[in-house]
Each structure stands twice: as structure tokens, then as C-alpha cells.
Image (cartoon, rainbow, N blue to C red; front, side, top):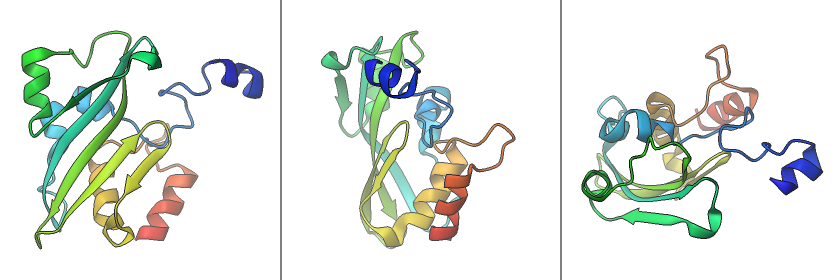
Length: 155
């Protein structure tokens, strides 16, 4: 908050919901397990959420991690409630299995970071991120300038 205030004159500049955000983890809250659906993306067989990091009320000194083969099952059994006020999703790690059997990982860290293992897989991963809502669209529903550059680069 202090960096945002002093560097940009805006304490909320580095907030996850900042208007310049490229990525969001909101689909994990809104869609739950359905955020992992990939049957509409050619070339991807399955997607597994295997690690989720969160903090309450921007207390980044106390980041909590839920991990394992069934993160949503663990959350359903032990919490937290992902829609809890003040809870912020910080980072999610996904394991993607392609139809040819290859596996890759992707890390999404709002507001502006997504890390893919291989550049050659990025068109399929980008399509899945777009279809599930992990990529933030501009207010008019169009891709932002930065997103359109990524789409052109990978498409």
C-alpha cells in the first residue's frame, strides 16, 4: 500500500482488483470446480488445481496454502470459504494434461503474472484462461491492448 501511495499516488494501486490487472483468480470463487473445465479447448485433456495460496485482509505475512490432488475437496472439508470477505487469493498452480499425454504447469498470480512451462503450449493455455475468465477483459468486454498483443503473439 505504501509503495502504491508514494510511487503512484494510489494506496490501492497494487490491489488485486486494480483496473490494470491482466489476471484474476475470481473464477475459482465464482465457478469452483467448473473453473477447471477444459472440454471446450482443443488439445487439453484435463486441468487440476494443485496449489492455492491465500491471505486474509492483505496480511501477506500469514499466507496460507492449500495443496494436493483435490484442493477443492480440501477446501470443502476444511475451509476457507473462498467468498469470505477480506480473503484474497494470491497464487494458484495448475497441472495441465494435454491430449498427447504431456503435462505442464501454469502459475497464475494476480494482478499481472502467469508463468507457463513451455511457450509452445501457450495458445491452448491462453484459450483456456480466456474461456474460464482468468484473463481480465476491458470494461467493454474486449481484450485490453496488452491482452490483444499476447493473443497475437501466441495466435
